[in-house]
Length: 251
Ligand code: NDP
Image (spheres, rainbow, N blue to C red):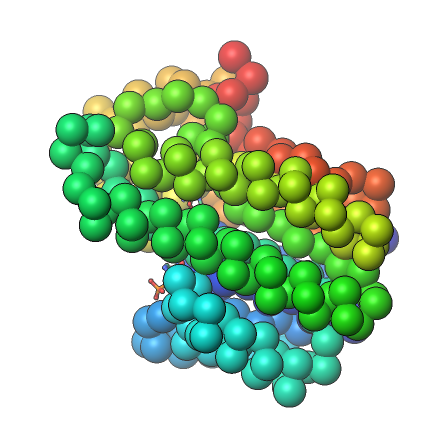
């Protein structure tokens, strides 16, 4: 039920951090993976590590804030792999600032990457899945901050709250095409995005104390829930966002 042999998965932001972990997870279960991000060096490193793990990979330079770039990526994936069955909307960024210091460019950068990027990739993949008539799985990577109120997250929380709503709206629209749309909302996971904050001992303690399990997460902690949402294991689930946060939001 969790095997993905013959499936093609597109992963935005697949060059490092959570996205690369997801590419490894899906690839190990038999999927061909198409990873996309802007930085060429990270993409090449990711491609090498996936290839060394015997995973069939297509690595493409894509900016998810550009419709043209996302549409070209989809075309390249279809030219190389024929179809697409799984989209993981993972590319994201964060700027932590108090409300009064957030400037327009901060807001635009975070909303364009995290929310417009999800819209563009989701729309492109959904059109393709509908045309193929194969059904599919779309997984939107959200965050605990899409649900809970927390300081210094103005633009990030707005983007992730928006993603949670897109998950529900798309689930409703795409159900008739056999496409399940769910979200995965991690708590703090050690990645290039968070390592600076997690290296600050005081902040690290504060974060760990918010969790019931008294630790931050590793990439491996996301594997099982992600695989559930990307596979036939979740055929009767749609419109849900699963929190993988060590109990942070259950308190
Ligand atoms: P990283 O910063 O480690 O990786 C982000 C990835 O997104 C990189 O591959 C980056 O590549 C890519 N990316 C960023 N902007 C764009 C863009 N405009 N177009 C294409 N690709 C882009 O972040 P994480 O792995 O930590 O986070 C991944 C996702 O998980 C994000 O959506 C984040 O909000 C979410 N998340 C992370 C948590 C954590 O604790 N780490 C907790 C909760 C949610 P490049 O810059 O080269 O384009």
